[in-house]
Image (cartoon, rainbow, N blue to C red):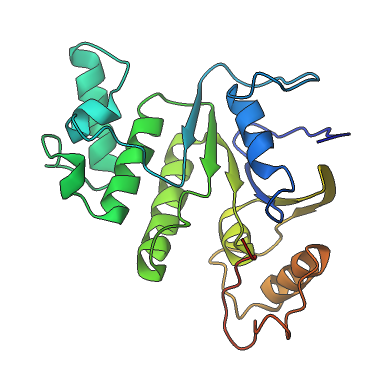
Length: 227
C-alpha cells in the first residue's frame, strides 16, 4: 500500500472494495493493530473490534464465554447476555459453538465485537460464507445495530451490491492505492431498482474493471467480485 491518506468521520459506515491482492485485508489489519510491519501514521480509536469471515469461536467454550472472551466478572457476563439478545441469540448462552448454524455463529461473533462497545468496528467479509437469505438477514441486523450503537465502521467486501446497501461511502482499493472515493447518495430503503443504485453500481464495477455483460450481471441483481 502506498499514498493512502483517508479520514473517516465518527459514526460513518465505509465499505472498501477491491480485487484479491489489492491490499484490503492489509489495510484492515493495519487499522486493527494486527500487522506489525505497517509503516506510516495510523490514528484510530482505542476501542476497536474485528469480525472476520470465519466466526472464530472457541469450540471448547460456551457461546457466552466466547462473547465475553478476555473479560471477567458479573458486569462482563451481563454485557454478554445483552449483546446476545441484541443479535437474536437470547437463550443460547450455554450452547456449544458446534450446535450453532453458520448464521448463528456469525451473530455470536458480532455480539463478541459489540460487547466491547467499539468506537471502530472492522468487518472483514463477515457475510462471505453465508447463504443468500442469511446474508440479507445479517445485512438488516448490522444496519440496526450500527444505527443503535453508532460505531465508525469499515467493511471489507467483494460484493458491490453489499457495499451500496450498507455503506455511507465506498472506497475502491487498486494495487495499494485508493483509486475511487464516492458517497452513497441513494436514499433508504435502498432498492436495486433505483436508478441511482444502478448508476453507482455501474461506476464501481467500471472502476474494478468488471464488464457487466461479460460477467453475466444482467439480469441478476447481485454481483460479487472474482476471488
